[in-house]
Length: 89
Image (cartoon, rainbow, N blue to C red; front, side, top):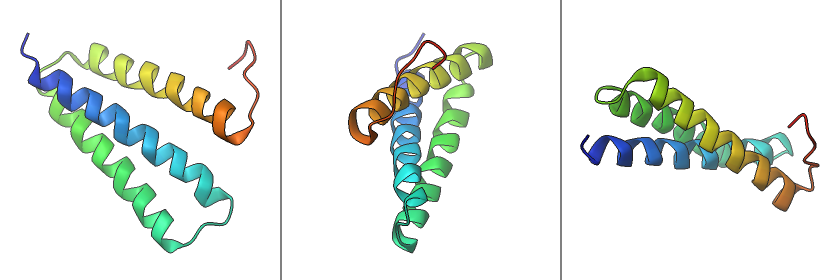
């Protein structure tokens, strides 16, 4: 398999992580700029995911996007926002 779709998939994961992390900031009363940036990152993430899905199987693409994204967001929540990491997370 070519490397290019995987680069798009990793970029989709990275932009999702940024968007969700900014979402936490927005929920804590950030301004309009942060809100617009959050929407841009989440939208870009879905666009990149769709591009990757053109060349990779849907199950592999979505599972990779979700697994890497959830793992990273759980770590960021623990490390930077003081959230707990328990067995249910």
